[in-house]
Length: 450
Image 1 (tube, one colour):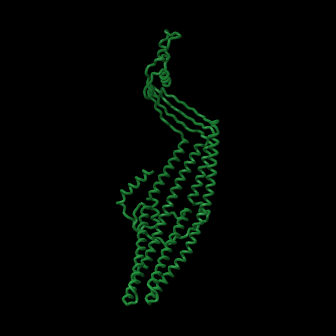
Image 2 (image 1 turned 90 degrees about the vertical axis):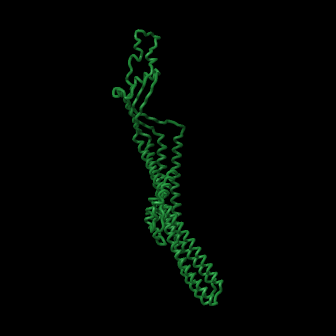
Image 3 (image 1 turned 180 degrees about the vertical axis):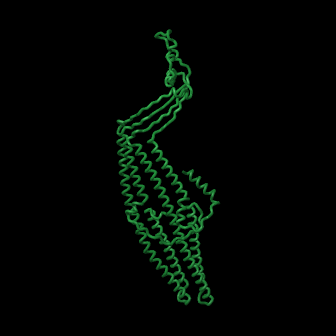
């Protein structure tokens, strides 16, 4: 897997110069692109294909095996040579020493049989073996591999949803950041106007140079904040390019706020990937129990073989052909209770998986309720902060007017401006947090992934 990742990364780097950056990319196009280009999703696809191949392999075992077997031997061993000739249907009476007939006594050894000389042996055969009954072991194995394939598919779906979550999170963060930068630029213009007002008042003798320095210090601080936001904006675009495996220079900004997901607990549990994986694990456990019980049953297999043999390769093949068919039954009667222990272990594992599923459901519902509660709290805070921004803006404008009339100091004006900036930044933070919570809820409920 590491080698595949290195190869994919190398290809990406080699082609990077030929790929044109994307501009004005919509959220829907970005979701399609991440499904197609993301390297981790590609790796998950490979894992799913491997699992699919394993399922095909498990199914194939039901059809048995057909093998061609070619044997060659050369020997002067009496038993081997006689067996070779007999297998080749070429044995003669002379092989028993009948050429010595008339000279044989009780103690006379048959030289042709004991000292046959070197002999070549070629045997070509086709053998088919098939399992007839395995105590449901092969069936259970096939179901397990199919469940593992499904698990890998769920892993891929879950990873895809995670990447889509990151894409949406990045898009809406960029939208909020862009909106906040625009607000900060308005604040920057207001401070520049205040700077001009301070300079004019200094000329008229109504203010001191300290007023100008205080305004300029605030101006520098706002510029610093804007530069930080722009740097974060650049990082978000780089992260978006990493997710899409393609450079992005601009996007179509979505709305600042995400619509709430409305689903019942039952619907969330039905669609949640983790719960589906837990159910799939329970199915695997059930088949493992069935597989462990296979040791209580006999196994029955059958075979058929067609062969031909000669002292030359395929010599008189049709004349020397032979067939063998048969069946084999194996039944383990006693192995010290190991089979019973394995069944007990598999059943306990299944009970554990069942309990884990119930626990996962409860934990998921608790997590969902916590997210919903947080979203509700954020909604109220956003409403409050929006009003606070309006109030802070009104107070700041009032203090600027009062400063012109020499009713308040420049420091009072700066304090009010600082409070407005704090409220603006806090509003951005809360809206971002709320959006991410909704995306997380979508991810948990397997919604909004297209």
